[in-house]
Image 1 (tube, rainbow, N blue to C red):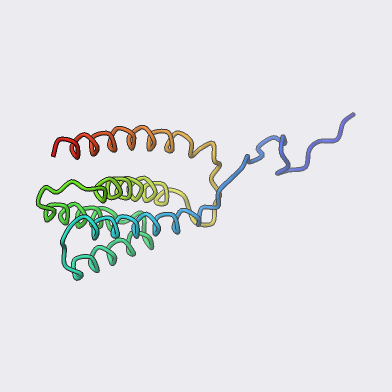
Image 2 (image 1 turned 180 degrees about the vertical axis):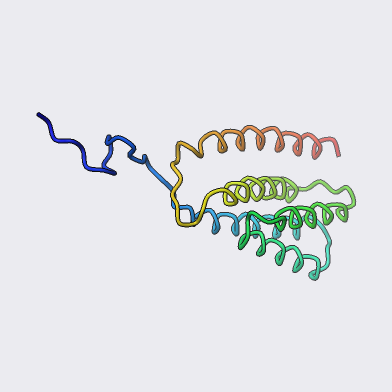
Amino acid sequence: MTAAAAPGAPGAPGALGPALPGWALRPALAASVVVTVLAVAGWTPVSPVVLAVALLAGGSATALPASHATTAFLAVCALCGLAADGAITGWLSLAVLGAHATHVTASLAAVVPPRSTVEWAALLPSLRRFAVAQAAGQLLVLLAWALS
C-alpha cells in the first residue's frame, strides 16, 4: 500500500501547477496603464490635463477592473491619438502595445478575484492570442511608418 500525496503537493489530485496570485494582475494592469499614458504623451501633443484625466481613468480601471473605467481610459487614449496629426513614430508602437496589454490585463483582472490564484496554464491561451495580435499590430505599425 502506498501513501497518498499530500493535498496541494505536486502530482496530487486537484493540485495546482505553477500559479499567479490574483492580486498580481492589479499591479500588472497599473503598469500597462502607465506605459500607455507615457507612450501617448510621447506620441501626441496633448495637454497635461488630458493626460491627468487618462491617468485618473486608468487608476480607476486598476481599482475596479470590472467597471467601464478601462473603456473610458482606452477611449481617452484613442482620442489623444487623433491629435497626433497623422504622425507615425516609434511611440505609436509602444501605445499599441500598452493599449492592448491594458485591455487584456483588465479583462483578466475583472474575472480573477484578488484573493484567488490562477494557474499559468490557464493564462497561456490569452498570452498566445496577445502575442499573435501584437505581432500583427506591430507589423501594421511598421508598414504604416514605412509608407509615411
